[in-house]
Structure formats: C-alpha cells, structure tokens
Length: 239
Image (cartoon, rainbow, N blue to C red; front, top):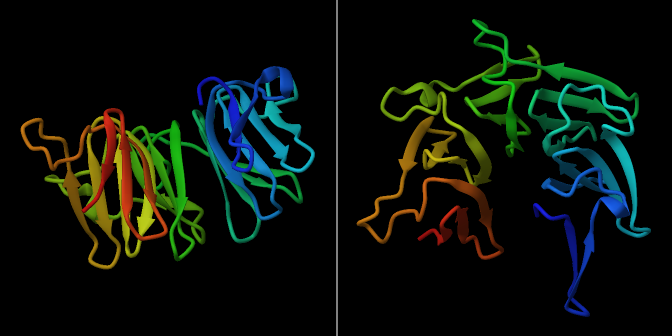
C-alpha cells in the first residue's frame, strides 16, 4: 500500500505491518515479487529491498542510503526470467540485473531510435508464455528482442484506429493467447498474439456493462479462469 507493507496470517486472521523503521527503504509500495529462491522483493518509491519471509529480515539492494547506481530511486516493478536474472522497471529506464555477477545493464529511450524504449518511465513488465519480455511505459509498449538487444512494437499496436502508442501503460496480463493491457486513463486493450489484432474497451457512463473506469490498475485470472479487472472506480468481473 502507500502506507507500508502488510502481511496476512490466515490462521490468526491478523495483519502484520512493516514500515521504514522495520527496514523498508520507503513506505510507498509499488510492487512485490517472490523469486525462485522464495525471497520477497519489494519495489518502493525510495529503493528496492529483499525480505526473507522466514526470518522477516530486510536486505537493502538499492536505496539512497545503501548505494544506488541509478538516477532514479523509484522502482515500479521487478520480474525474474528463467535464467534467474532480474529486470527492474524504474522511472529512469529499464534495468537488467545479473544477481550472480552483480552486472547491471541499463536501457533508455533514445530520440529518433524506434528500437529503443518508448519512454524512460517504465511502469510495468511481463513475460509471456514464450518468455518474451514486454515493457509498458508512460508512452507505449514494446517487446524486448533478446538477440538484437533492442525493442520492437508490434504493427497492430500502431493501428491509427486502435493505437497503443503514447498510451500510459499501467498493467499487463496474459490470459491464454491474449495480452490484456490496462492504461492510466485510456481504457483496456486486448492483443491477440496469434492473429496480431487489438481490441479496445472503454467506459461508457450510460452503459452498465462497460468497464467501470478507463484507469485500469490491476488484472487477475482466478483459479476458475474468471478474469477480474481493478480500476480507479471499482472492480469488474469479465463475462
């Protein structure tokens, strides 16, 4: 939350709260990741930290106080690839972090270079079923090309009728062969990977069965296969 980290114990039905006094670099939590070793990585507005869930001990990875090689302290999200490497979304570019070698590679937006990041403010990351890395920014979406070490935007996203260029991408979620893309004010988009086709959904105040708000902040598929879409103005169940 914006007021710290909360853990819930289902046995006792109680919450335990953690703040900066307990080791967090900042109380505004932007993202959580459980890595393959079972550690919890916490992205905040003031740095990145790792929590051992067994000992409840925090280890500062990057923050103002513990050394930060990035110009930005705002860590929006973190994902781990199949090689156990980390990809970090920050407000000043995309960061690749090889934990074993401590090697860091950074990617930025370069004006007039269509193969660079769409924007330096990277908001969200997602690996699809083929382990392609998708990068959502404040100015569009791109897919990382591992062989070329650059970025491409599918042609379907550039369609002048339904374009994802210059959209503020907030969240991405794969459901079957589709990527669901939530934006901050521009509605919900669905990209069919096989057909390379994009469908757009938006709020219409006079229509009850449309999405409740164009600001989409979370997308989730439950164990029954039902999709839930969280917006600034309510929760939506997709029929």
